[in-house]
Image: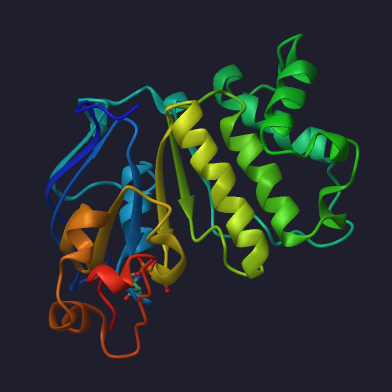
Length: 260
Ligand SMILES: Nc1ncnc2c1ncn2[C@@H]1O[C@H](COP(=O)(O)OP(=O)(O)OP(=O)(O)O)[C@@H](O)[C@H]1O
């Protein structure tokens, strides 16, 4: 369900680690039910922007609101689930079962002491069921493939039923068929549960028919809009943003979709 209720609102946001601006004058509004992809080349500031939204980096200049509240005083972190870039790179032998990994997503609510609720087993099962991984509950996380680990980490992120799911480069190292299945899963969470999804990716070619909105980031936001609006951008504008190596093949290419 798409609404005009802003979940993330960013105005005039700048950020620098040292002297140079890594993010400059960022303006972005993500409404409830949106499925946004933030796309940009290496070093364009994507992870920095996500880390600011997640409160992992302290905001410098500008305004960042989550669910209408200033991030500095925001307390509703259990409304936000996060799957990090490294979530699918556990080695064989990593000493945790799928059950333990997914259950650890409940600690946000129970604080630093690990008192898990009595119904945690049911919650873990329900989360695993929604990513079609129920039968792996007793397996060691390190024995699973990258794509399966990715699903387990999504289950961990959604176990506390967040309203927003944020994923940093979730399909790196995942093969093309599994990428399709992976996006079907995200689309299901977006359509059936109304979960707002924000994803950071390099992979513009695969996401254009899967998300509702797209933002091109390269230190600042060069374009932000719906996929339909993006398809109306002409080739020159696209190549200016992303150079000549970017190939964007959209499903409606024959109707004037952009290709660079
Ligand atoms: N902790 C840090 N200290 C100093 N500079 C940093 C730090 N982290 C990132 N940077 C710099 O900030 C810029 C943006 O980095 P960031 O990781 O946000 O980009 P990205 O778009 O996520 O890149 P990639 O796609 O390669 O992951 C880069 O120039 C990077 O070198």
